Image (cartoon, rainbow, N blue to C red; front, top):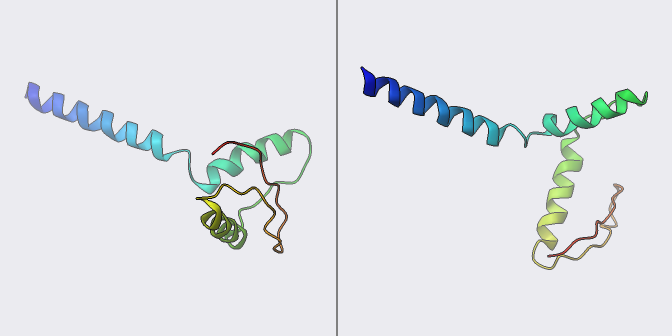
Length: 85
């Protein structure tokens, strides 16, 4: 019985850790924090747009090896960040 309790405790701990790692990467996770700040200053909430997200991911995939920080020239706005590769 004691070993079963230990195994159950380990399983529960593993489930919690997995949930914590997965909990911060969905579109809603990003939007919730952003929209909370926007609401505090009376600005309308943002919504996730899968078309724009797909466009951004495709653009990123094109430059993932060269780290070029240039505008895509596409139909959506964007701001190339400054960073190091």
